[in-house]
Image 1 (cartoon, rainbow, N blue to C red):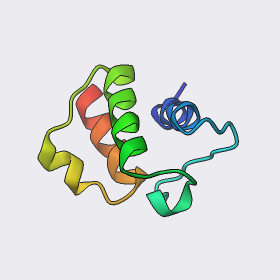
Image 2 (cartoon, rainbow, N blue to C red):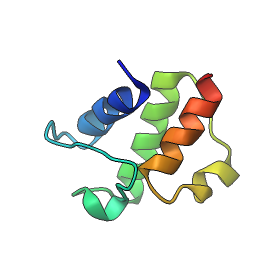
Image 3 (cartoon, rainbow, N blue to C red):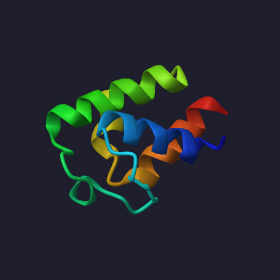
Length: 77
């Protein structure tokens, strides 16, 4: 399973929607229910699943799923 596939599975779980298909350009505006609370749940789930931690600076730098994906891949490689 690729990193984006794992990340997509996390999105489906956090947002309780198996139809979600994320892309690099996906933002919070593209997913129903992606608010500040679900964002925190998403980040915690990502950190747990991949065994990584994001700094506050990293968290505020994410503009879309592609940014998040690049950071995950840089931390797990």
